[in-house]
Image (cartoon, rainbow, N blue to C red):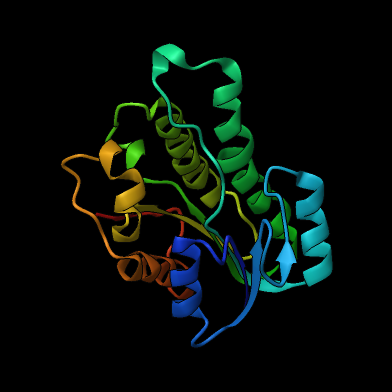
Length: 199
């Protein structure tokens, strides 16, 4: 299959690329690296991406920014970081990309553990992750032509403990390889409307 991996050079994206690249043709997309560059918060760039790649069998998104900060210090623009990037960036990839998917193609998005296990400084992330999961459940019953959509909700990655571990005290870290298997399940499997939680 021919797949687009958005965020292909990130921690999660690299693991996904290693897992799926063994058996599929990959188009690696990143904000500043990869085969094609893309700012996920810009829908015009998303349209240009698909116009360039043409028809594909699947798209995986492991990209998008969100602001972590104390709720008492958050202002509206801080919430808009996650809304414009991680939420609407992924929603726009799914919405625009459906027209470029071959029949039976798949869309796989990324939420995260904070959607159902809140942490301090994570109100915006919890909002965005929960919204993504709701979107996937709703979109799954409307997609035409046998198209499928799922979302992977990873826990704290082992590779990210040094950077984010202080925010996730008491959480057991998971390997990026285990997380990548959930994306493989979404791409290669038959299911739709699923939230694959890797904890």
